[in-house]
Amino acid sequence: MLASKYRLKKRMNFARCEIDGRLIQSRSFGVEIYDRKDKDNSRFGFIISTRISKKAVVRNKIKRTISDYIRININMIKNGLDVVFLIKPAILKLNKEQIENEIYEIIIKNLQK
Image (cartoon, rainbow, N blue to C red; front, side, top):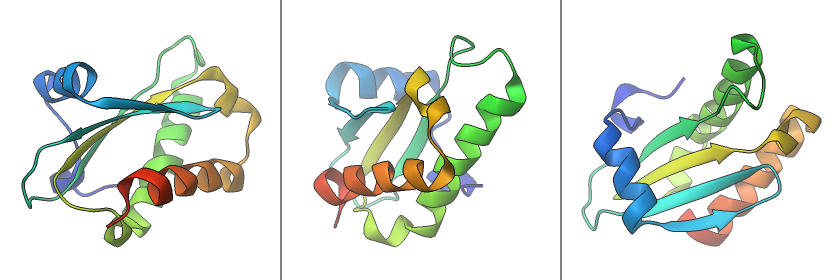
């Protein structure tokens, strides 16, 4: 689980990512990235609808998989970003390694220091 200082919490921050950030699409999720232009820690949020799965267990497992990968690789990501993951239904067909590979591609292309 991501430490509290790395999590987006307020609705305002999620909305700012949507309005002012840029959107990057992959097969199983979209990523909204807003550059705050400061040196504070990057923060991450997750939006996963009940349309993905009605079961909270499944939705939480997906969030844990993504947040755990971010936690382990946080040193690769530049500071000053607000990042929101918008989960798509295609993620249900992927295993943990495939999800991590897709996140890695996003990080390398767009979020790396």
